[in-house]
Image 1 (cartoon, one colour):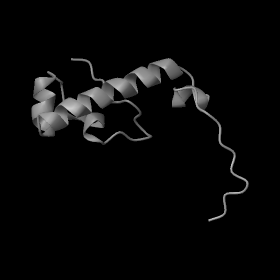
Image 2 (cartoon, rainbow, N blue to C red; image 1 turned 90 degrees about the vertical axis):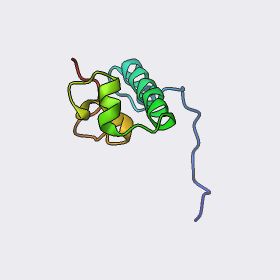
Image 3 (cartoon, one colour; image 1 turned 120 degrees about the vertical axis):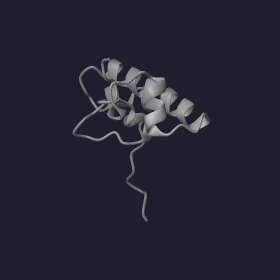
Image 4 (tube, one colour; image 1 turned 180 degrees about the vertical axis):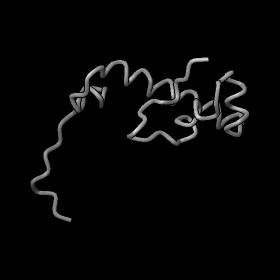
Length: 82
């Protein structure tokens, strides 16, 4: 693999802002929150149903992003109102 023409640019610390997405700060905050939720779920070795109960979520779909199921069609759909 040839890397002679690779341009490296230091990021701002917010990938969403770097990509020019609207509401970049909100996206970053949600990403950090999901990361912390995922960490807790893994530390406690919770199943998706148990994580939903612990979060008092309406549905197990509310904790899906924390379980690694976030998708492009439903970005940050893991924040469900109860």
